[in-house]
Length: 443
Image 1 (cartoon, rainbow, N blue to C red):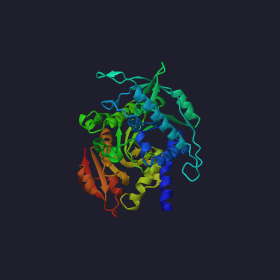
Image 2 (cartoon, rainbow, N blue to C red):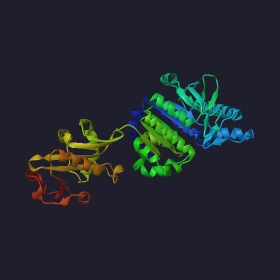
Image 3 (cartoon, rainbow, N blue to C red):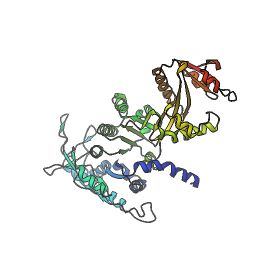
Image 4 (cartoon, rainbow, N blue to C red):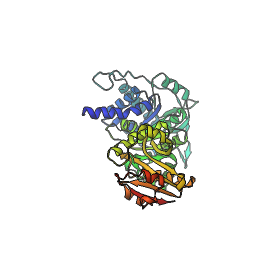
């Protein structure tokens, strides 16, 4: 890698390093992950998360390993829909599969060779009988026998493990107070743990590619959806029918976690090239994300804390002559006139509304959108907000002065005007060297 690119990437990840430090992430992955040649690299990425201060809870699946155990014993798998029926013979396969895979995961997390990314990591992994389960019972006339569902999670014990700086590892199995063992869905375990811990993130590593789902067509840029919108879309029979049974179950678990207080749920495909790190340490990530918190991308009146972000956003446009330069001092004095759109703590769009009450007019100015987020309606959203604010102030006409983007304003209801149409105070300040076009919009 070019040294400059490396430094730039490290600096761009720094806000996420700070934001994720000491936060609780639940990461769930299927047994298919352990069969891929890049599984060791995935383990390395998990170790890196831990080294960066993330409190990790891992939940692994085991479906293909169970299938292998059944095949080795010449037993046929039994399903009702997409839910496994676990009889006594199948349960022996479940226990063998979980025991083998769990030891393999623990062994890989224990690696400490200096020649690997795990060098010096010294990870400690803990597990226990933290999941209390009950039988699924009879559904649609089918007895699921030893297939179970989560009844309770020992959140206190898991919290103590995380407080000790250890990784908590859970398998998709639970125990009843009477000593029975139940086969569980890993997604349900992950959802219950994340909800109980009030985890900051729940991450599902999928076997499919969520970017190819029909659901992804409605997620806009970078694949983020508010929880309510995700629920609305997934209520559509067409969208649900386009997904596999396994993916439907994971999506249901994702929505349940969001409703239960987990602010962000990530669904990441099986991209071998560090997808987990890209999702968590870059602004747009990869895959899909459902967010329940209202501050992921929000528009609000700017405050003094937003000055630095606004300056960084408008500086390239000022250098290009698109915007009139503003000093930090001027911006601090005018900050109450600005609205900002903030995404994950970064100012990605801004605008100012400058009132001229004696003329019942206001100027819509200093409109800027980060290059990564243009052509997605953000400037229009800021305009609508400015129009509503202007109406509340009794403004009858908006005006804008522009040298580079007259067509955008015309497309949004502005019409060409003249210098005489401006408020007298603005006429006196008009810069004849810039020769900005005057555009007016009646409200």
